[in-house]
Length: 111
Length: 120
Image 1 (cartoon, chains in turn red, purple):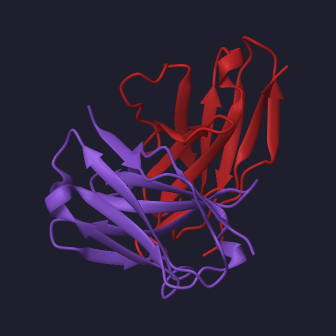
Image 2: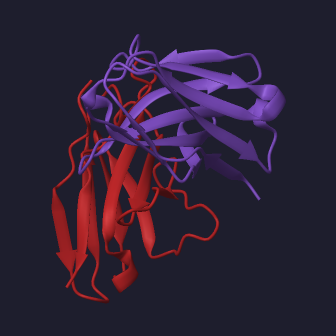
Image 3: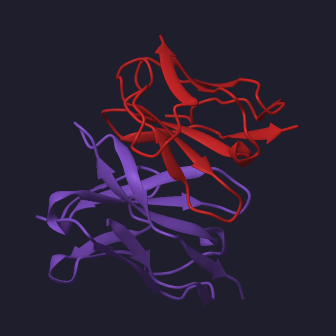
């Protein structure tokens, strides 16, 4: 199974919204409502931002939202802030080996 | 407070063996899967494998099967990732993660990472 496909980079001005896509197949993204998103700042460990497609863990701002349509999941950051500048990775449960498939990663730049 | 604390950075030569650790605290260590994720320099995340410390059931990504060994010692709430013969291509940051969800489908806590450098 190949990595899920994400755009290499997206950018936006403070206050704007950006959306990151994550495209897989019917064996991973399309087959399960188990897509999660992780934020990684330079030199830091990744942090869970969204799980089960659209659920937010406690402490994650509601500016972050997730959705899915068919084989493509999306992460939207509304009201972009400077601290949102980071790399973002999607991940899908795949049911069979490999059990988890990560996306290629997207760098979000706040202009 | 849930914490995963990993062992420190390692510098090794090709062919040497290595075992890195991940100690869990603040939760029932035997009740959750623990996973390992690799991040090569400047690259993305790759799932390596998971272990259930309660019974040591272990699952590997096909990409890492036979290349590494994942184990756990539940008496000290610690999971391990080991290599018998390191290669330069093993140079990477390695993260341990707690795996949760209805089907153990996402990673809610991450260790701080262990940087492994393999160089002659």
